[in-house]
Length: 296
Image (tube, rainbow, N blue to C red; front, side, top):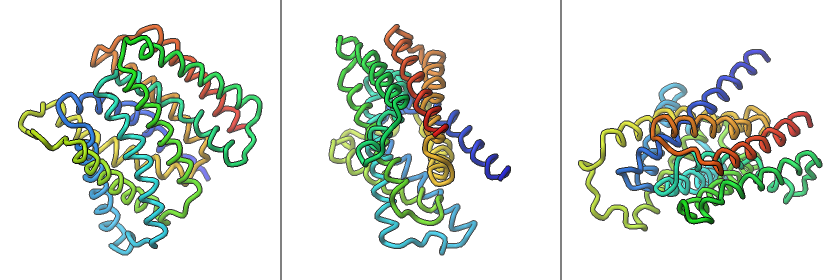
């Protein structure tokens, strides 16, 4: 039990810090690289590396899975990576990384609503947290409604967070490969391939010139492959299998704090009152939801 607990908290720590920094990395990548093609390349590379590591450590047989398990992994990968992450990447071409992170922080709100839609009855305290979270999202969206930032980017992040929540919820219900790292590899490969297809359909390949990409974008992409995907995403997928979903969801109120701080320090992103107030409300709401769910 102590070893298991230590592993859970180590994985949580990685998700807390590494994923908080990925919003900054994404913002730097899309400054000079196409969003879906870069995101697709990121996850295809990370998925291939992870599959190679699994095969090297445990033999090629460790990558075997039934058709049903592969289909489930592909579905979860498309929801989490193509839908959830892909829309956030696209949104960060027009909105600050810190704001994107704060909007994504509402994932536990959507998870509660998804559970309620499948017959679960949240407690009054949890519902209070949901309403508080929706109020915080309203404040965060106000700059977009007022025309100060691109409302399209805000809506993309909200849609992405809903798809991410659906993918996380589905992962706890579907039959996935027995080895979580094998499942993670399949999910990243599926999501990465989906990103490339969407990028090609959007015409991102036209005028493609890798020589014009900045050194900062290349370094950020490498960081996202190794840490954001290979380390962070794998830790998250493992946590979905090894820890209560309510505990895993605590990353949602740590990531935005890290992301906002990094965006402010490195990219000089403004800390406007809607971001500070709305972010504080969302983080408080998530704290209420997660603390209530853990007690339950």
